[in-house]
Every structure is written in C-alpha cells, then in structure tokens.
Length: 92
Image (cartoon, rainbow, N blue to C red; front, top):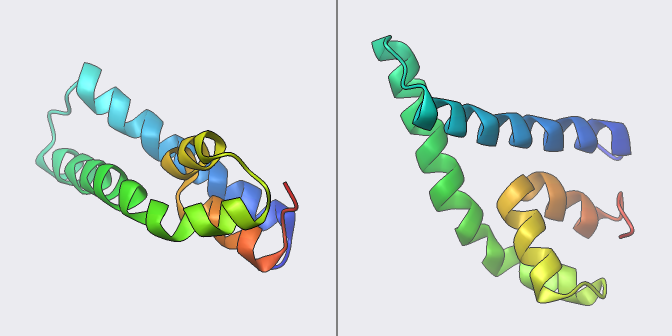
C-alpha cells in the first residue's frame, strides 16, 4: 500500500466509478441488478466523497494545497487520493 502504482490504480477505479454513474444517467440500465449496482455507486460517490472533505481538507492544507485543489481531488478520487497523501506516498 506504499506504492504509487497501487494508489494510482485505485484512483483510476474512482474515475471509472464516475464514468459508470454518468453512463447510467444518460443510458439507463435495463437489468435490475445493474440498476441496483448503479444506485449503490451513485449513492456512495455522491454522499461519501463530500463527507470525506472533513478529513481531506486538513491533510491537503498541511501539504500546502489550496481548498479548491483539495475539493476537486476529493470529489474525483475520494480516499484514494487523500489517504496516500497523508501516508506520504504522494507528495503533491
């Protein structure tokens, strides 16, 4: 977990989550299972990422990042961005 490649892969997964959300918005799923998966990802990303700001803001400020940078990166990547930053894997 101290490797940048691991966390960059996790961050890519977060981006795929956002793409999945937008795909479901513009091309709704027919399958009940896919709709349920989409709803879970939608709720997770839209509820948890904003809540993570409480943890990411102090970490990002400590590393010298602006609130805007912290907000954007937390909303895009969630914990896959701020946790490795806190652990020193990334040195933004």
